[in-house]
Image (cartoon, rainbow, N blue to C red; front, side, top):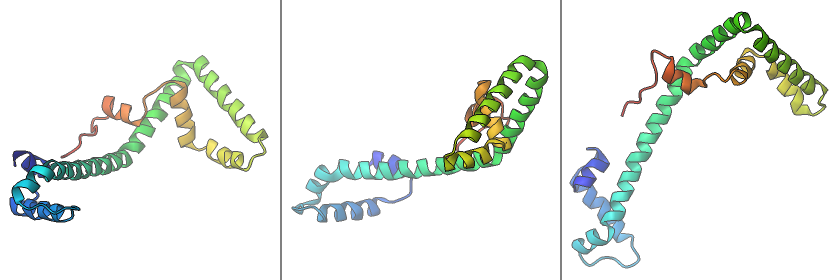
Length: 160
């Protein structure tokens, strides 16, 4: 019972647990002659179902919270990357020239490639997001979640 209380987090009552266990017992190939036997045979299965339901709910909630957090703070991360780009353009000119050269080589390869998806990739290639993504990879800067944990003053903290 204590494990069921933890697994359900107060969302249901012992009466509801009994009804659900009764339905589970009734759906078995050979119905159980007594409640005690049904509890012994199906209690762990029922508990696992309840824990899985709770964990799936928590996972869905945290996933939704993460998506909302990223949507809210992604523009701040992109601004942070743009600031790093502007800074490195001045402070690390040789490295930045290497980055530009690598981008030009990639652009030339996409332009020369006759495949239809290469044209679509080339359209995306010159967007600010693609440039900043390539810049981040070239200089080994943090991805969104690393940045969020290290630099964001409003980093992600899931609510249960």
